[in-house]
Amino acid sequence: MMKATTLYDGKDHQWVIFGRDEDKSPNIIDTNQCLIKSRHETILLDPGGIELFASMLAAITDLVPVESVTHLFASHQDPDVISSLGLWDRTLKEATLYAPAIWEGFIRHFGCNTIKYAPVPDEGATIFVGGTELILVPAHYVHSSGNFSVYDPEAKILMSGDIGAAILSADAPMYVEDFSAHISKMKMFHQRWMPSNKAKNNWINRVRKLDIDMMVPQHGAIFKKDDVQRFLDWFEELEVGIAVTDEEQDTTEQALSA
Ligand SMILES: [Fe+2]
Ligand SMILES: [Fe+2]
Image (cartoon, rainbow, N blue to C red; front, side):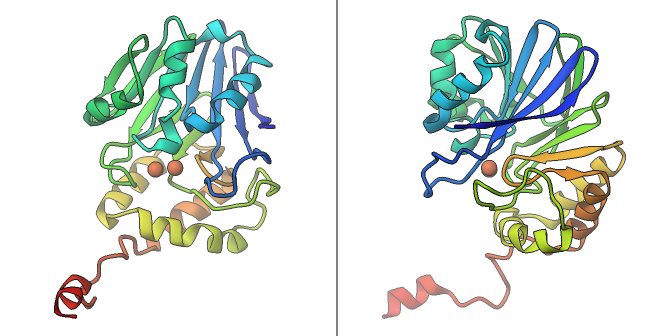
């Protein structure tokens, strides 16, 4: 069963996060799916992989009628983010998918006939769901080459996609409790999947200007206020793109001469 946790319960809109599915295969990375309900409309942020579509549909229809899902958002093209698209496409009668413009020709391979693809330009965009403003903040190359975070200025929540991701077990707490201990769960993910220090620092500079109460990554635990700042400081210092170094041996050449 997918666990549902309410993150924000405002006057006109709510944030709910789904994840920590104990029935999930151990070979698949655990993901957080976000739902924002605003008046009569609902958006799903990074609705997840094809394998969890059925449990996501069951979990969301406990909270909202499926017809209220008028919007989807994909931070980037990865299968853990949006490979469920083809099934949503057959389920939702009228919906719009906001996703990076440069990934349109790729994401459509998951199936996108009924759903309208709204390409988000590189500079980002502001969208409205049921009157709630959501700002799509560029996060290119952190890690995907076309990538966005979502900021809700009223709830003060930043959905950061793969940034801030940690590999945790299904019974792990929903929130970061001890930042220092959490570092070991995030370090390799950021160093290996994030290719560019320049891009990383560009995103940090954008995000430092936002007033953030909570940062919600697509994998792992949620960062609350002070831990958001601790994360940004830690991430700023971190060297990423470690799979390519100046000193490495050319394994291809070695293989050819063996
Ligand atoms: Fe990803
Ligand atoms: Fe991911």
